Image 1 (tube, helix red, strand yellow):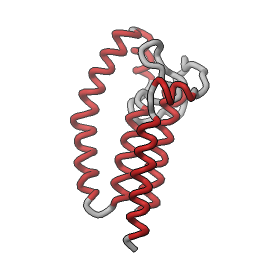
Image 2: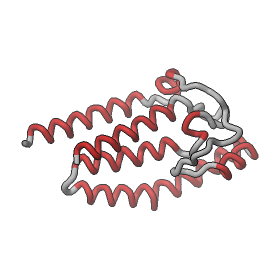
Image 3: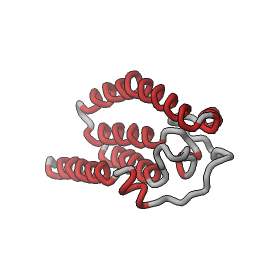
Image 4: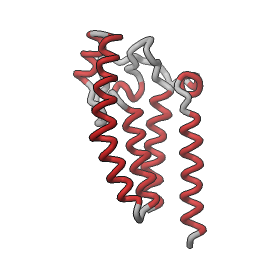
Length: 154
């Protein structure tokens, strides 16, 4: 379904844009914006994008979705999560340990992290620091291709 998949793609990209405008890598523990509610909002955004594009594609893409989700949860996330937790604990110590104990990885909490920083979304973090514009462009192009494929195959 083009609409259901499109909603998931939009939600995934919105989460990634929101996250990238808050993420400051290695200099401070990011706890503002979506990071006040979950530890890995960029991964959640990626998961929503993958699922949304598979739903938009329909047909055999369900097989890709199952394979993609399997790779994501059984291979990518455990390895990445373990490395990243160790790295962040090494850099930020007890501050990260407390944050990780409160927040969940992919499932947002309803209440923000009590010690969350109050910082606004910043375009320079989105564009220069995290370079999310390239993924955004790719998402727009792929979405247009899938919508075009749907309408021109009618």
